[in-house]
Structure formats: C-alpha cells, structure tokens
Image (cartoon, rainbow, N blue to C red; front, side, top):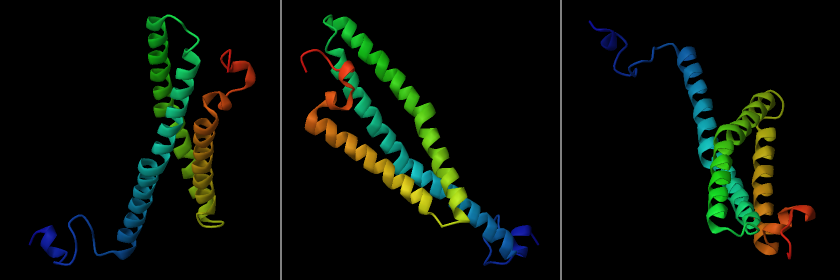
Length: 150
C-alpha cells in the first residue's frame, strides 16, 4: 500500500493525521500569507504613492533648470534613484516595522500596534497628497528649498 493511501482519503497529500503539526503549519502559513497580503495591498501602494509625491517634488524643483536636455536627464536620474530607494529600503523597512509590531503586539494587545501603524501610514500619505494638491508641491518643502517666484 502506498504512503498516500495509508493516510486515508480524508488527508491531503503532504499532511499527516497529526492535528498539532498540521495546525501549526497552517498557522505559520497564514501568518506568512497575511504579511504578503499587507505588503502587496497596503504597504507597497503607500510606498508608491510616496514615490509619486517625491517625483512631483523633483519635477517642481527641476523647473529651475533652463536647459531642457539637462532637466530631463536630472529628472530621470532622480526618479530612478527614488524608485530604487523605495524598492530596496523604504518598503522593506516598513514591512519590518509591521512585522515587529505584529510580533510584539501578539502577546500584549492583539494587532492594535500593527493596525495603528497602518492607519497612521495611510493618514500621512493622505495628508501629504491633500496638501500637495490644494497648496501645490512647494507647500511640502521648507521655504529655503522653494523655487524663486513661488
């Protein structure tokens, strides 16, 4: 009799009849899956929105460069640098914060720390976008960094 048939018809291939091992594997899988869902549907889009804000600021600051060729080269280089920074530093950093909050708050107050952080991240992104679209990109910069005439 093969190993698959010895487990009986109600056991999925790769799982045993031992409920604790199966439940522990399911729990670990669900935590990893939840982390990936939070990353894919919330953290990464927030980082991309922040990158778009930075791109708008770069375009605003590039207005002081009068040579069109040089302006385009600088915009492209800064956008490439910003995209790399978001992909390799900001997004993984935010994921690590969420993972630590989730791990640390699991014993204390459930998922309160993680939820609070994610809500705060969304609120910050919203407020930055609101301020940029209402007051313009110069509203996000200190006075000394604003373009002349604004």
